[in-house]
Image 1 (cartoon, one colour):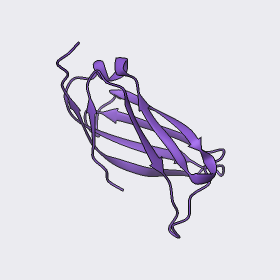
Image 2: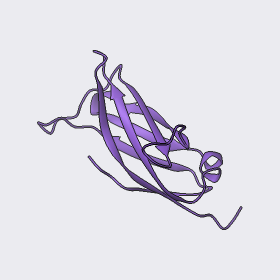
Image 3: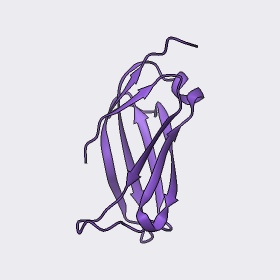
Length: 109
């Protein structure tokens, strides 16, 4: 699915994903690996930032997305794109969310 995010420059960013299957039941993500990046455009060679993704509750499909305040402080304010992928225990890769992320400028430094 497509989801827009807003991240405040210079502030800690956290959000949770709750993964559910087509039947509405939680996806057990035990043993899964998650990766996500922010880039200026889909065609950028290098990522602007790597998202930290941690499984909070595997049985309930709960995954936390995290960026430290130090990381967000180093991202220039503006619009970017991002996506998050998961690799299951069979090595199947699925993009679970994508969209635009807006970094809002900080005043207090």
